Amino acid sequence: MRHKKLSPYLVILLGFLSVIAVGTVLLLLPFSTKDGISFVDALFLAASAVCITGLSTVNVAGTFTGFGQAVLCILIQVGGLGFVTIGMTVISLFGGKAGLSGKRLISETLGSSGKLNYKRFLFRAVLITVVMETLGFLINLIALRNDYTGGTLVWISLFHSVSAFNNAGLDLFGNGMLPYSGNVLLILNTAILAIVGGLGFIVIIDILSAKRWRKFSVHSKVVLVITPILLASGTFLLWFSEWGKIDLLNAFFMSSMARTCGFATQDLGQWKSSSLCIINILMFIGAAPVSTGGGIKCTTFFVFLAGLLAMLRGKPTIVFHREISRETLTYAMFVATVATIYAVLTGTLVSVCDPDLSLAFIFTETISALANVGLSAGITQSLSVGSKLLLTLAMYLGRIGFMTALLVFKRRWNRGQDESVRYVQADIVIG
Image (cartoon, rainbow, N blue to C red; front, side):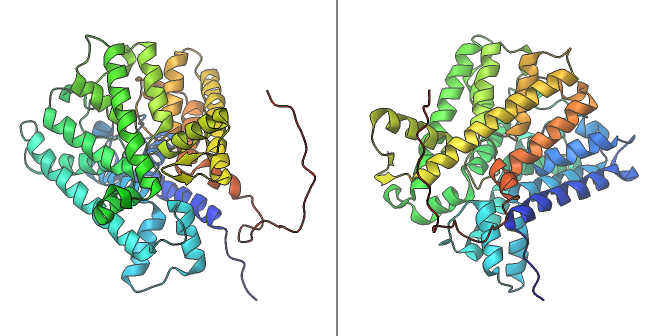
């Protein structure tokens, strides 16, 4: 009797859930913490690490032992690369083949077409990760040499490099990066690691292999155009909004962190509402697909805007001499709409659980969790159990994607749409 193969959507959902569960158990072990930790906090931290978010209900450096910190570092690495990427790399190392279901699974996780050479892609993704994290680690050794020595310097430099490239935002500094707002080398190194990680492996590989703009894929061109626009606009808007309180370097750093790393050299709890709005927009948009970043993705935002402008002009959506399909436009609208609705609902429920907290801070926390960023206005550790669980779910759904979560319920996932039945189109007045 043939066993029915699991839906790739269910595999992705259960895969991340399993890693979070294992991480929670490991963090609850007596030798993982110095004075113990509650189940909810362990679950929250495991989800934050695996979903490369960076929000923390406890002080990581003061709560966890070396073993616990190592568990978090591994969870960040697994979450950044994706358990599917790591699993398929291991299979490839031993000469195994992905198979049709395996390739479908990678396609759902990486958002790539069937023409992709999976084995080559996976090895390149791992290689890029190792090279970037190694370079970041070496630069951190120099940047932090005056503050730490010996094994502590090595471990903190390595942890920070892994956390930055994977856009996790968790740190071992104790008070975050607030004391390092003047450390230019550390700031630039962290920002570059996060930006490169947020570009996505498809774009990085395209740059290394194609080398010329005209040979880049449309996807890579979109990412390479929208990314600097978002970074630059975020930098100058934050600089003007917090005029006199922040320099351009730190404005650039906070702009890059909002897309979706989560380290902070500034206290968001002291920022103006206008600055928090800018941060929330950048967090919501996020990084590129197939990257270590989150958000609805910058390509989704680009397609959404391009489709809107094309509709207003009454013309097809053309990008770099290519027409964007109706399916892609619909998908972009769906992701943006569902993410917005979910953010509003979650923020509202969190405000019910914690009515004494500022609504502006609550929605910053909610969007940060949903977009897998990690920036906070300083309310994470004061959240109630209900709010922690709501944000844990938001981090999880933000990482696996709303479409993946909904398609778990698709019964015939391995079959195309039935084209034999046609219905008369309905006319419904909109607007």
